Structure formats: structure tokens, C-alpha cells
Image 1: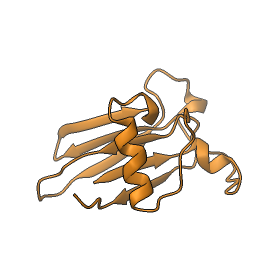
Image 2: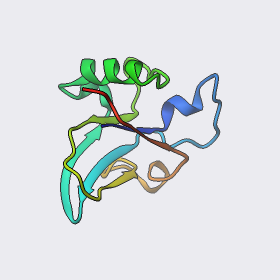
Image 3: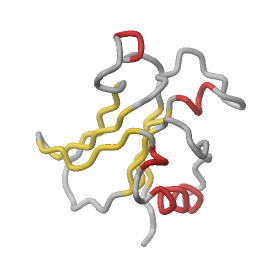
Image 4: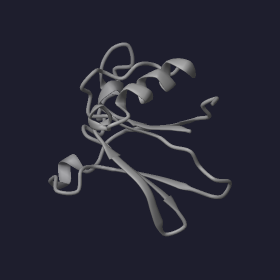
Length: 108
């Protein structure tokens, strides 16, 4: 699965969404257990695979160093929760804003 929390990219053309979450952090839970987390997708060790998966599912591209968040994960059947927030040590103004959560099934 490709899971993305898009904020900064939404503020740019062609979307031009006002008041975006400037630096979303994505946490994926199964029940109360944290499965994976990401902040700044391009820093992920699998960034190239994330980029390839996004292209394969025809998701719009994220900037090469955008502060959007993304995970590429294999998930066992079950219920999961994706939580999007601002960075944990940011001030209150950086904790809010518009973000888009996307979930794509990626073919093996």
C-alpha cells in the first residue's frame, strides 16, 4: 500500500489550496500499535520505491524535497488508522492546516 499525507504540495500550482499543513507527519497504527511513521517522504530509505509506486498508481508527483509524508508498506489484512499531524516539536501554528490523505493499492 502507498499511503500519503500531502500538505505542502497542495499549496502549490496547480492545486493552490490555502492554509495547508506545512510539514505533515504520517503515523500508521494497527489498533494502538504504531506500524510505521514518516515525516518528509524524500528522507525515507525507500524514497525511490515510493516515487515509483506513486507513478505506477498514477498519483500526482510530490516535489523532490517536499515536506509531504508517504509510506510504502505491506499490510496484513485488518483494520488500520492513518493519523496526520504537524511535526511533534513545532509550535501550535505549525500543527494545523489542510492536508490530503491518500491510500493506494500497489500491485506487486
